[in-house]
Image (tube, rainbow, N blue to C red):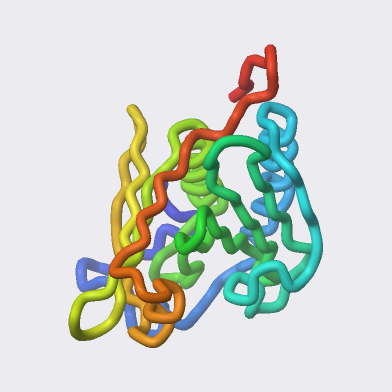
Length: 198
């Protein structure tokens, strides 16, 4: 999606100052209402428990928030919980499963020129993939160096995989003597006799 500002970088790319400048961050304000509507849809269609409050995820909540954080946890099977924090930017910070985190917008600076519609599309694609297909994530620790977190989301329309590092000390604490933890998250259980709306 083309950004609202459609900056003309004349083939040389954005100037250095565009990476630290954010024009009209309030344009992302609708993300909060759209996310709340998405949460309501998920509660309507799936068997989930909703908890709202503060201090639910220190990593997601390390920036100022505009409303309480929401956590959705499937009531059956091994579906991945989802946590959504509503940042003052305004934007969304999301955790799916145990280790995967994502931010919407991913940046917001003028060089990236993101728009709320594109950020929300990415947000809903991720959540729909988590709840309808599930995903895999793992933490492993090589003999030397940092730990490694990998994840993979896959559906007929969506495929995404990636990885990140985690400090060796933190990985050792989580693994507690194991070499690897692999989590296979399953689709969320739908409410009985209920057709999922899109």
